[in-house]
Structures are given as C-alpha cells and as structure tokens.
Length: 123
Image (tube, rainbow, N blue to C red):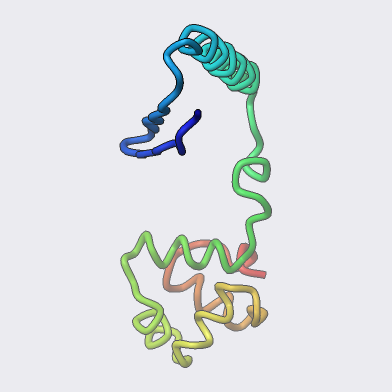
C-alpha cells in the first residue's frame, strides 16, 4: 500500500519521500526517472539563450509611475521625502506611482528638476 508523500523544499529543490512496496521499487523508480527527464526536457526547450527580449516582454508596460518609483529608489528617497521636495502630500506620490493619479505637465517639470530626467518621461 502506498503511504502519503512527505515533501520538504529548501534552496530551490524539493525532497520527496515515498513509502512503497519493495516489489514495486524498480518500476516506480523508472517511472519517476521518466517524469523527471520529460520535465527537464520541456524546461530546457523553453530556454533560448540566443533570443533577445524587449523590455516590455520582460517587465510589461512601463508607466510614468514606474519611472518615478525607480528614480525615487535610485536616489534613496521615501515617498514622504519626495512629496516634501515636490510640495505635495505623500499619498499623491503613491497615487502617481500606482497610476491612480495622472502626472500633470507642471508636476512632471518639478520631478524633472529633482531627478534631472526629461519631463516628458512622466507624461
């Protein structure tokens, strides 16, 4: 009779322990080996080291808020610190970064003066 499997995952690998009848050991081991080989083959086929990917394929659409968040992180600023520099409330920064508030031309120009990036990136 088959016992429930025990699984333990650490460092990107999983150890699976099965308790099976001794008379089925070779058959089950062969079956598991075939499954592992098929999985590895499919994984290897899905990787194409020579293919170049666009930034959109890797990260999806990059929004003005994403640019703002990235620049803020690069400068090691919190939303509150950036809000103080821009003269707005901190939740406005959050809303702009998450696409819930549009960035006006006037605000984009203020952001440009802080980060030194062309204001049109934020529109």
